Length: 429
Image (tube, rainbow, N blue to C red; front, side):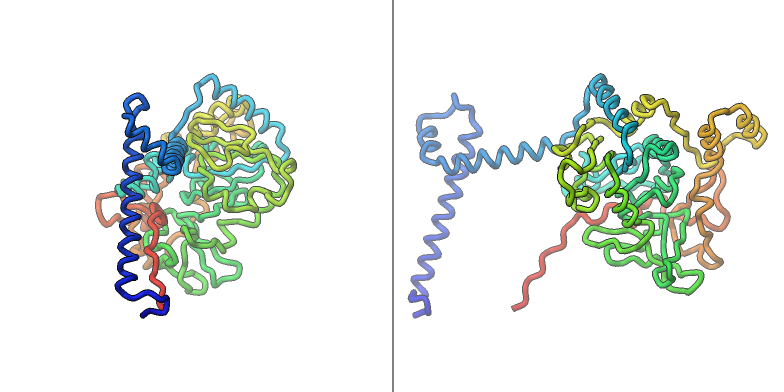
């Protein structure tokens, strides 16, 4: 006789009864589910009686259906009609003009125009991986700052934007000409590796993706610090990690900017990760004193109900309309002044009266990353296999163009990771 008072045969009988009851419940659930899929006019009297006897199951199944439909709607991409979008952009332009301290939060959606996939869109990296589908490779060295990146740089130059907080690792904000002090790249930068033994940390900006050997909790890049010889590490913050580096994460500046902001503009971010950073949303302040929020996204975000205005549109389309409404020219991007001689450049400078347009032509002369980059030392040329950024399409930096191992494009070590969940470990008793 067991301690509970039941014999072994009695416990087995009780277990059989429990399993039989569960199977009957599941079968009843399946029957009710099949009936609910029918139109009311098509249900028989017997089926109507079964539904009447199963009110709890009907309520549960209808709740499940509503939740599924709600999730589907959240994943759908919605576009405002052109006239409605223009009206909303006019309202956004007024908010930009009147803002005393405007901070921009950016996500993967601002880089899709550079052929870098987003994460949670219909064809996003996480969406495809969760469906068990493969993620197509992308040559990230071919990506260049988009119209949105260049517009943000222009707005900052005009002192309409005070700070940019980005979730992106693609380095395109840096390459758009934004000052380092004006950017917080919360999840790192694929072009930057650091020595954490040097104080302060010594940064090495490269013209290639430094993350090919790195992954979650494995950050060494295979190169060494030029000063102390310590192994360099990448700056990427993977899912499940806490970002501790000063730069390029720049959390201190991001937190300070959020505390000063009276307006926040979110561009191309699902906000599912950013919402988990309370210090970016001033949640300690009463609602009336929190910054006004403006969101540009094609899909639902968890901050929509808090937003003063939600614009359903592609970031480049919205920013093009916004810059036109503000009367600002969007500076074009080029790695170098392709096809232009120095004489032509100087002649054009003499014709330009707008100081910023002059700045834009100077900027066209060279992508900032080339002046910031630290060249590889002798013997380090073979330390990577990534394609390097080149100053022009025809010209490659001598001794610093890693040869890809195959003709297929290669993804960075940071790209497409962090989606799959680890299997749960069994507890050891």
